Length: 574
Image (cartoon, rainbow, N blue to C red):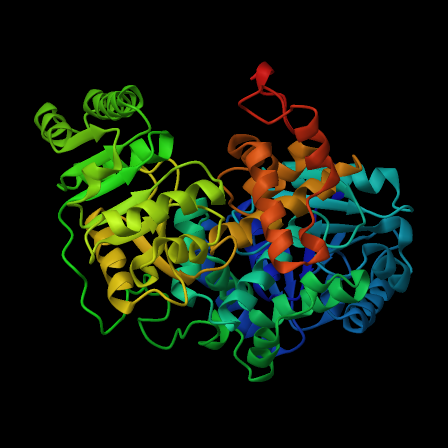
């Protein structure tokens, strides 16, 4: 084994410990897996067995309920519950059994590695190895204290590399990168569910389909263990005093009730039946949907053209209205080019393309919408502009026509009241690019009728999209959870303590995000991101939602991300 770690012991075979035992054995290493007693050891063995068969693990696993069996280990990794006294007591006993050269590693998320090292009396020989069991396990954060021996740090980084993983070296700070970002995000999702803002299925579907995450936040909490998450949040809140880490009351309630997630058979979802991890439920409502045949789209930009393409492609006669004939023709040409690319890739036939374009017409006057069953606005993200548009659409469109806004952050109720027919108005937030992204957030106001909501859900499904329902509140589901996470990531790189590349690497390789938060901000556009973050801050008045100064400085300097070549990353150099 690289640099002396030839025998590794893992103490605590819960969610993190079982992932470690499996990872080490897959790499061909002999592993000692230790638990407190035979019952806990049997449960740990079951967790490891669920991850893979013994045939897939060339390394031998030695199972034990005795701490004395770790005496010969070169590296002892503790994966115990997030309780300082417990970790101090158990590893204190282990240290007395081991050789003076033994290195100790903690998998803590919320506690201080430095404080643990001090409690263990092993300041120079303690590191943190932070990984999330519900992630892809391609990246490990290696945490050192101010007194960690340089040789120990190097040995640990080589050890991580020998497992085929990327090591990101970090100082001891609350939550490091992955824990700090992920725990706040997961806690916010529980709060959103607790407030009945959206269903658990819709929250999870929104984040998987809207952000490309491998697992929704509530399902991920169940996979991690609600008790584990609760302890980590409490530790982070105790260390930082930051309210975003104060465990959501619902989370505390579930833990007190013994509902820990998958491992207990029930958590935020019920795993005692096949419905436990079911797909997002269809819209439930007593009202019948109105029939929608002809659809209108107002707006000739990327979103307007994309939504019009989706509607026409699904078989609906579609009218796209722009500010001028030239802009309307330009939008139709954009749709034609997009469909042409699909034909070239073999995803669409020439006949389907011709039929789609035959259902799509352009116009420069709103009067062209008077026969539409549903109209979607996709104009500039300025409330005054949208209100003027809805004031015009209200008396112009058919009395039973549904009027929808595709805004990503502005209040739908402002558009609804401007229309004079608020019961027929809601939000249908398509995600960019509309022809590709499957998610549509269906946003109802206090005045939206059930029939209008049912119509939007039914139409979104007919368009091949997954509708998720939520109330009219800034950010809806995706942006309300995503942008505080992105803003917090900016704060991490603001003082240059960590690099944007390391933050992105941890979140992609360690947590399964398709794109790191800093690169994602650059793709969205830093000016757009700043606008959304300001809206969230103005709405909720939470200090943690105030836009990071670094974001404001970059926007002020004209560094807007990929579209200008420079943002958090330099896109000019590829």
